[in-house]
Length: 334
Image 1: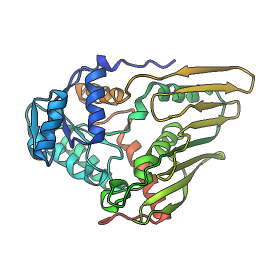
Image 2: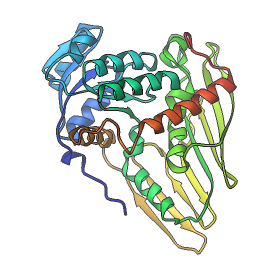
Image 3: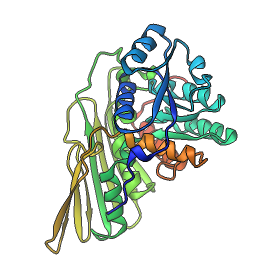
Image 4: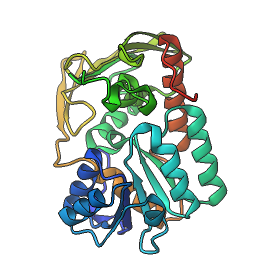
């Protein structure tokens, strides 16, 4: 069994939240409930919205300006929770202010923007990480360890899907190309990151999909090909709820992760010799593990996490760039 560190043992940081949207509420709830981190400030382009968020979570400082947030001397780390299209701008602002930065997934719209942030963090000697929260969950760490121990033999295939009924109006961010909408960046990033974590970067990506009326991807399917006849088959859609499950098949058995595979979940290992066992990784919340990882890395003077490295993020961004190009999705200004 892998050693899973308690998020409450991570040294506390003073956090500022840049963008008090839906995902920021989850970050605040789970940071306060399951870690010893402190949220000291929140910033929004709407001062009233920042004030309401601060009141809800007992946050001392609320700003109607992002720059005021990142320049607050009481803020050690900034969580960027704006729409995808704004990740680059918010993260650069925080990095230039010398703050450690956790950016909601995906890090940016594309690999070029991701490299720009990574270069900025490297030049400044400041911590930066993509908030791919599922990477840090107990069951994910256990599955990875099982593969490394060869419990199911040589891996032959991996399958994962993430579909939800999210076909909102054309003005919604998920359907808006100006806001980097589409299934891949919002939902597909989970199965793609899962496959990358378990198998590494593929030799080839083959993608097909259908576009929405606003010309973002409404449904995308990918085959990621690896050496030794290994494949990952992935699917994502905005148009229907899917099982959101994952499984890995090897020459000596299989691993099946129950829905929802990218959230705290259970898995079962079944070997060809007839033995089988289960692991229950369901825990309250889930964001606390990535938050704790940031705090540990910053305390140790690191600029990136070994568990979600800059190269990991770049690999996944390049896969999504490749898939979008094959499907025909281009964001304005790319």
